[in-house]
Length: 322
Image (cartoon, rainbow, N blue to C red):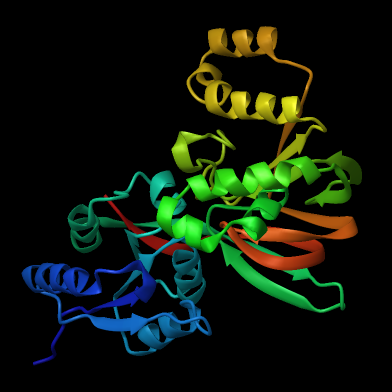
């Protein structure tokens, strides 16, 4: 008689702590659900998740937990791409952005494990960034939530890891205050899919698979994670007052106000001139830079690029949801 019991794998970041307790919880839940004992894979600097996730798939697992921060989740998702093996989220980082955008538990591990074993699978898009390096080489990387160039990438490059570990998102505030005085607009040339080439001076340009950031900020309020499209936000300002205006828009205007006709009239009547946020949508976009710049994917720095091509692999990642 063939054994049809299913098995999960757990890819975990060891620096996030309390792995013994997590192992006990997952082993108990797996047994109650009739699953076999889970396989466990520890990430490393050399392999933050992608390679060992593919090892897990080769071992025949039916689901892969990502236990770590946004970087671990992104790497595991890369390994799961087009495999039809679903991702289960165990958020243990600072941002936990994919979980936030899918309405999954951020701090309740027991609930997250329950959803993994008892929920359903939703297929979402995976953002694909093809990076053009200054030496002429190319690299392809996946992202789940958002990528960007400008002050966001500068903040990620300047965030103190020790401060982040101790104080979480406040470390980004510290990095932002240090990056802001040197933030200057830069020129890009961009081309949306099947559209003409355009040129713009920008302060930051963001490319989103979904749109909610830490603290409930709606960076891209119309972004949908499974529509096969990328949402692009072009932020333009040259003053500290302009950055405050951008923060006000994201915090107050992109939420409830934007969802009603009255709210949109209020936004139109009260919008300042210190900054602009332009929203674009496309299945893909190619960006070239006048001068090389840093880039970030899901909050992780990926070095300096001369240009980048963004697209989506529609429906290529299954995620366990409620």
